[in-house]
Length: 385
Ligand SMILES: Cc1cc2nc3c(=O)[nH]c(=O)nc-3n(C[C@H](O)[C@H](O)[C@H](O)COP(=O)(O)O)c2cc1C
Image 1: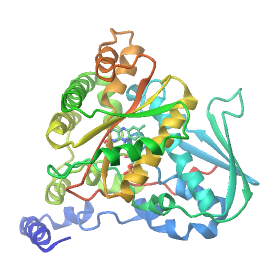
Image 2: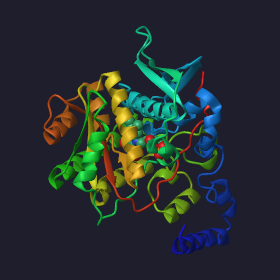
Image 3: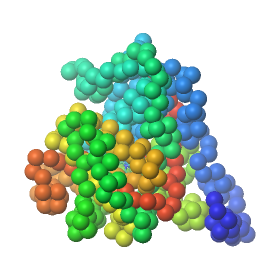
């Protein structure tokens, strides 16, 4: 923290203390951001090498997942790791066809294979090895081999979703964008495109605002999303999942104030969410879209998740801020579930101009203005069955 920020925060804290609210500040973890059992997994990561295959799982659980649901279960049998989706951790009406859930599994797979190589294992991946069990997503067969440590592996504990503004002056060069595109060269059935001209980018972000409006007006979607927001320090430390105030991309002083106030209602939270999405147009440098041939294909969803995780790790090595923006695909799924007119699908297609590729994961990327903070994680042992 620099001196100016410290003094600003110290000022806010002293106002709070003077107001007799110091107890609530402790209670809400104002003085212990990123501390406590919910954040231990990030800190323990450096000792995972001595934990055998369980250590590989520890890398997997630090992956991205929709609403930080961590929708995975792992089974270690001899030299194999099996990954299952944990269907109880679906976001309901936000993800009615489990599209995001399977993408989240892909993120975990990417971390896991990076960890396998770095810990001296060769691996073979089998997708959906049991045709009678669609929840059994991936089997990883391991064999002892040479150690191959990669920069991406070493970046695993430093990757965090950054929802903050992008530097308005410094923009990602086209050669950097091409490097992202190259990252997915060997990931089949996926494609990454950039909305290079401002017109397309702004059309996309405006459509995303419309999708956000539709989500908050849809009670089931609004409730599903809200149920993964963690509103108190206590809730974060017990559940160790979900989206927290510290990861919203708000400034440090705003986060301190927000933590001190009583928890907001669903309606107020929806309003903040809408305003944040509406503001993206002012604070976003680049928009990219990860596409697949068929968004209903679970294998392709996992591949897209691997692409996202790899991109995010690589972006972290380049000092970039990255955030998925899934509101349009979430409305596309919802319209399909409710058999509504496919408005968002048609509008999105007008922007991408693809008829044979579908958007699975849109995201924004730029140079950061604020530092992204860690989100909670459940213990490795608790996700091993
Ligand atoms: C499939 C998928 C969809 C996501 N959609 C969004 C989104 O719409 N908005 C957002 O802010 N983050 C989104 N995220 C990021 C997650 O919220 C984030 O990964 C999770 O909270 C864990 O935080 P971390 O990435 O910092 O570890 C998404 C992640 C995945 C894998």
